[in-house]
Amino acid sequence: MDPSATGSTGVRVAGVGMTPFESDSGRSLTDLAAAAAERALADAAVDPADVDALHFGNALAEALDESAGLANALAAALGLDGASADRIENTSATGASAFHRGVEGIEGGAAGGAESDRTDVALVVGAEKMSAGDTSDVTEAISRLVHRREYAQGITLPSFGGLAAGAYLGRHDAPREALAAVAAKNHGNAVDNPVAQFRKPIDVADALDSPVVAAPLRLYDCCPMSDGAAAVVLTRGGDRGDDESVADAADPDSETFRAPRVAGIASATGTHAVAERPDPLAIDSVRTAGDRVFDRAGIRPDDVDVACIHDAFTVLELIELEELGFYETGTAWEATLDGDTALDGDLPVNPGGGLKARGHPLGATGLSQIVELVWQLRGDLPETRRVDGAETGFAINVAGFGNNSVCTVLRA
Amino acid sequence: MTVSNQGVRGSTDDGLPADHAFVCDDCGRRWYYDRRSCPDCGRSSADASAVRLETGAVVATTTVETTPPDVRAPNHLALIRFDGVRLIAQAADGDLSPGDSVRFDGSHRLREGRDRTDPRLVAVEDP
Image (cartoon, rainbow over all chains, first blue to last red):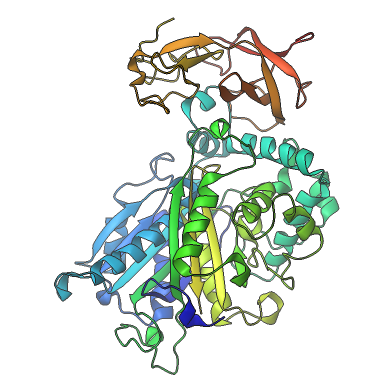
């Protein structure tokens, strides 16, 4: 479609970087974050001294007895003296919320005020070190995200996934293989992704044979716990022809121009208690944030070439695709079985492996989706995992089981 | 009974029993998950009343095998629609199916190490 027909925030992603996602990195939280940040700065050809603002997303540091004052520690480690810095927390959607704050910081600065006060370059970093606690510590920390009356019943996020999966399969008369097909697809997509936590392919039978976690969900229907970090450099720069960009890589007049622009970003909250939703398969935060971002970007779901969907559980990929309007209600499972969401399908979904196989370090996940989209839109990736000709990318990062959703549209 | 919400939000141990919902004294709206005001009329929940839930219908079920250390494994859970509220609660066993009628019954420690006990969901044979 004609890029001039779409909306834009006036913000570009000038550089991206991330660490591998893994079960135990053996590195400190600050080390992980700094490594991703340095890769993003190098990718953008931005000097740390030119960074005006740092936004650091992390969800669990306090719950897992890690350090506090994270943004300030990272600013010092990177030599960002004088930059503004803050910490963002939004449970599983922490990374996308940090990205949202970064975009807003640049956009807000464009509205007025002295040039010396405005943010031209923002560094957004998300990191998590879930190996800082043992499995029961992390499970307990995450289970505290639910409403306290849900907590009293011993409910965890996989509990919601199991309830939703059972309801989805029953209502739409879908086979259990439909969920397993999501897992097999996303694991397959991660095989050639060097930053993915799981690079071993699985098939539908493997997923169906794995241990039950929350019936009907099995182990391969659920994302892992992960260590990892992802980062992006945001710069001011509107449509092509705008010469205000700071980094060479974001200079629209440069021959090396390859900084996708943020065509739209939006977030929305939903009910905190999952049971309060009129329909267990309706996630208002997903639908609302999606409607908003498509409106702001001036596009429709049909215009999206590649999507990163928050597949913390396989059933969420199906529900979100339907809530966002990519598929009619009750049809995403058939599309998945038909290969529509495969790398070579009509709508490639989670080409980097998704949360399922790339991993889910809470604070980094949303930013890793942005990193993946940027790689896809710039055509940086090898043919085995590239969506050819992708110009419009979509990402959704979800907090809790739909308490809050953040949607982003990027345009090449 | 009339609910003083003082303490309801104080800790996870002193809220309403699992088989009770809030009801607005002004408009009669019910809600289960405590909040600061009635979602319909906005009246403060500080002087809401509590109502015991009678019979509900199962919407969805799951059995969770991997549970927190202080929660039974497996943990049978059901999403239930009662009159005016929906909730997720522990079921006595894993035999419930969507469409079944249920009520709360018994006295169980839902998480180990807590003083309070609450009822679990059981099937109603002849609703």
